[in-house]
Length: 635
Image (cartoon, rainbow, N blue to C red; front, side, top):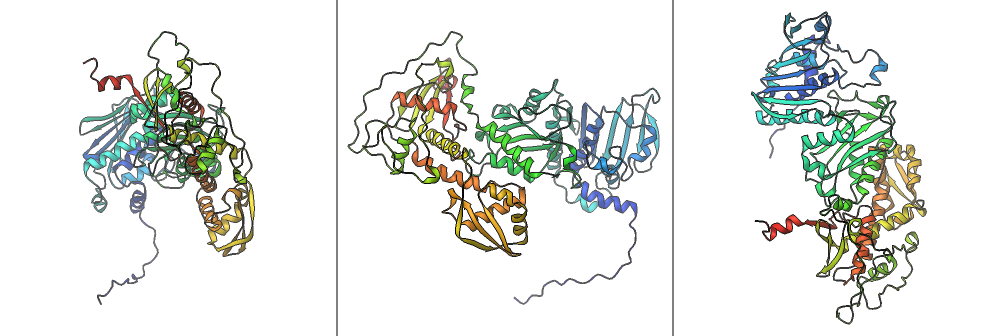
């Protein structure tokens, strides 16, 4: 109990002196080279900057014994070779203006020098000019230069990584683990450059290969994603390109494109989230938060979305000189980037995917028109149960039934609901059943044929059987209507009779002062009473019953970190989701075929109707092949 604690002693004073160049390079290597994958990333960056269309990576012992990167790029002139391995020697930038608008993958000019200080490096290169009919081999340790044979391009070999710093080598993992990190580093480059072919060899065996994709645009990206991440990723992802009228080239404004995985493809880990800025893989909290917030309405639990997002903008508006490994960036206008990524992903996920059900018709004969059947006589119910269900197109009737917590016999389609809260008072939105019957091919979710246990709707479409959770589906329909009705209105702000004050940190005070305009658009008014105290003077009307201090703290925290906040929208949507849950048609409610078909038609035109408000799926397709397999047909 009385054991003495270790004490910190003051080291003896040493004179200030300049460090030797080799030690400086080894210190820099500690920042740039963490493991073999770091070397692979830097060398592949250089190969891409050289204009290579084919890059081959050769590894031994997970990259510890050997890392070789071959490319067919432009090569290095003989006169420039002695400078290629020197510290801060680069062809990428030459002035401050170049540094402020970097358009290449590498630019710092310290990676090769840092690698040379901790490993044996050799560089073999040749340029495709008549003046140099052969290549040159440069030894990184001795600086010896000798002629050799090679096709145009460059090969960099790094042997015995960390041989000069054995303590660093002890922190490396097994060869299999280091190989996995190297493959992941190349894979990140491959996703961004479909026009370049990549191959990875380990101990003489080909472990991964992605051939260059002919063509360009979204089709090329789709093919490369299928090659690298698997066909399943592409099948469960939606394409996005925002804004729609974005130019393909020239001076760039903000543009976001790529593929976002559907909610059903979400994973337990965030290992399939790829974000790129001007072709550079980055880990950026602004992009991550924006993408995650776009999934809030459709993800179940703590699942992690999958996506490959590409952001392009003027290089002068993004600072890539933030981290030695260039994996972090800083935006001049973070709010613009956050809103762009959020809107792009949200708009792509909003489109109902039920339309894919008609992508492959099973018959070439013209579809015949289907006429809705006549209403059937209701089944016998207990005295307190309604004889027929509400029309799903009548939000007011369903809202009235849900407000009581249980259906009553007086709840009919002609029910007039009582007064609703002022903030949510809206006119009923009618979605009438189409007066003219449509052919089956125009109904992605098919026609209703039965109701199962009062919970599921069974429908038939061109591909087989469609099973719909009617409560979850109608809950999403009502929820989207309520959101739309509120979105059409300006966020109303309600002043507090007595301002709510709270002790704030200097960061919170600074954020409240600099983001006063943003807070006003969210319906909040937060002012500083002192350097350590903030006062909440107004809150959004829809959230007036909540805790104003907690709301203000949450909004200020997000604004300070991401320059944007979805706290108010998230809190409002949670309230609307609760209202929609109580207003949706309940389980064990008998619906007629007309009502079931009306629900299917509304699902086909409602945004995000594939998931309920809690992120659970609302419908599932059971194809004919699956049904045939259940009964062993064709075997």
